[in-house]
Length: 247
Length: 269
Image 1 (cartoon, rainbow over the protein chains, first blue to last red):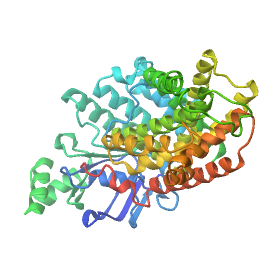
Image 2 (cartoon, rainbow over the protein chains, first blue to last red):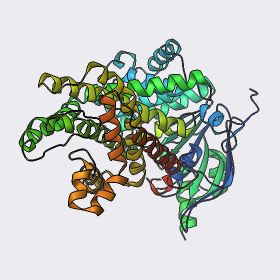
Image 3 (tube, rainbow over the protein chains, first blue to last red):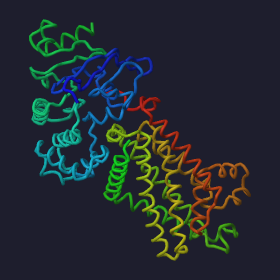
Image 4 (tube, rainbow over the protein chains, first blue to last red):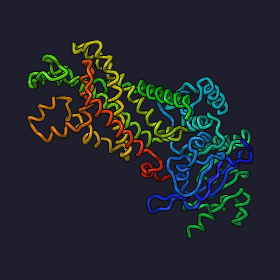
């Protein structure tokens, strides 16, 4: 697969809940190795966007491509190329870490021996290998999130989507996960789309999309978005954009 | 969909459901206690009240305990289907349903795998129940247990599909208690599980007609005949038609393009 192909392309995406517009003409792209932050206050449409990109909802408006595969025309090919960490915890608490990961590997059609190798690799990378036989119920929130990230990477996706993955975590766990995923984008050349409403999760080198009331209000590098708004930093830029559109 | 991928997925779901079942020991015990109480307490009490005439597949007078065994097998499968459906509502509330539905396999196939896994668990429960029943002297011919298997697969899938359809209509877990009262119990009592339909007809023609339309009646009769190594063609056809209808409707309801899921889990950022 060519490096030129974008890991995620969204064009003209729209969605309504009845009469309420949840997303309106949303367009942006994420390249391989890029860490893109989908920044927006609660209710901006981030979770709706994740539901559309993961095909839990289907919209007739607009188009989503994952590594070149059109989600509507070739949904299975598209889904196979993405890893997802949902906002809600999705691990089975009564199963141990390895059993949870093997279940995911089976859903992706991985051979068991290959799955076990990948589990070892990803758990080692996340410092969770020695916990693999522990029940998920015994893990703290930060460790559960790490397992979910390892799970999302098992099938070696080109695109990793994380929907507010630090919700409910304490500050050290949050920092740890934010830094780890940033490192992963750099070292493994994976495209990351990270949604959050927390400004301190944005790094200087990131690219940012500001979503508000279902619309893209800004899209560019942190420096570009800051410059566009004439503010000093991304926190100021975010406050300006969200404040401007609210008035 | 590659066959090898489909097969691994089915195995994965089967293993997961089995592990969950093993870990939930209370669920297994409850699944056995419920029909055993009916069999060993209720049936013993009602033996003298309810006389059963000789009706097919029985060739001689039978005790009431023997009569209600197929109904209790149906009860196990119905409750297991509901339990599985309950876990889907729970999974959806907890989010783990999402992990399944975003897998790179057709959604209809994922739902069928889930149904097959639930049916497998229900069959384990049924044979455990029959084993205990035989220890109390309520046993069938050995070949009857073998003939029972295909019937259990058909009935388990049908009742599981029915439960899956219900789960797509339930928005929250709290509504499930209502479903138990308004769906499961009427379905069980308005069937041939506890009394033959001719007895029901003596009391009320309307109730008899309702019982005759109840898919659970056909599941029970298919099971009853299978235990005597006989095929009840009418019950078999009706069960398979009900399976096709319920499964088709459940797949429709869980189709992302149809909008059923749109009403769930809205909100967030």
